[in-house]
Image (cartoon, rainbow, N blue to C red; front, side):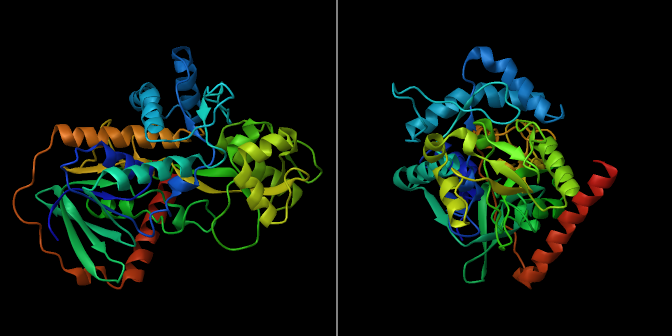
Length: 430
């Protein structure tokens, strides 16, 4: 296949936002493992943080560090916060419809571990609103961007220590190479490696796997966040998230005796631990969450998707409690990148959940994920544009038989990633 200027692996908000930052004369190919709507960016419920006023900077900074157990990279946190207002203005320019008051002013909500309301939202489908608007913008205004669905990265193309594109498996099972002057990995998290996760099952850490095999540095890959509240069910499939926003708006948690047992606005890791301890004491697989204190009007206007999904499961959240349980949710570690999203391999960048720029530390503060992804996606694109130099020479030849059988390769890579996470959990990062 002809060489592209840029290949972007992934079609979530990070990949789409990056694509929008490049000049219109750059040829860009985006690939996505399934259909383009099946990215976790579409699932983000709660909202996106923003520096509401200059006076909120220190509180925002401190909240992020406290949630992250002070293992955050402070320079990255500063970049994210200071870039937030421009990022929101750009999203609004793309048509993103954040909730507003009757006078047109933006509405802000609060979630766990936030000192102040600083989260913009669109009902309880903020990720879908942002990502669909970005996708719409790419399709309408960027004829230079080609999107290939049902196409999976299986390897990096490398020559002389530089990345020069990727090897991909196409929808029909055949293989191809996508040579490129620059490659951006935006391939999401690792929820597909776990039995219970809020993520789409195809998110199996492909970026991590190929980077491990090529000696690209990783960082804190054992920092895996468990979300404290997903709807308990015995049905198989992806866990349905009950957004932290409902607790920010006043929802309460009860044990088996219908007694409160924890501060609902604790950081996610601490609340998860409290819920697991309570479930052990009660001998149950869930605790109860009560949305009724929020009020029916707010539930129906702010959380219509949660209301509808719970009704499908037989629960009317305006009248009764729902059973909730923790599940894997987010990946704070990933491919090590600098402040411009560069990996340790030349011409290879990583953004979004697959990257680790240090913003989140050991535990992500609620609603920082969309903001962090967008801010550092833009920085990657701008850095590539500013330092753009075409590669010379042909891409290396590839023996596609090395990637067969595909299911065996996937199992091997899954086992390797999980083994490394377990090793780091027991022995610490080395």
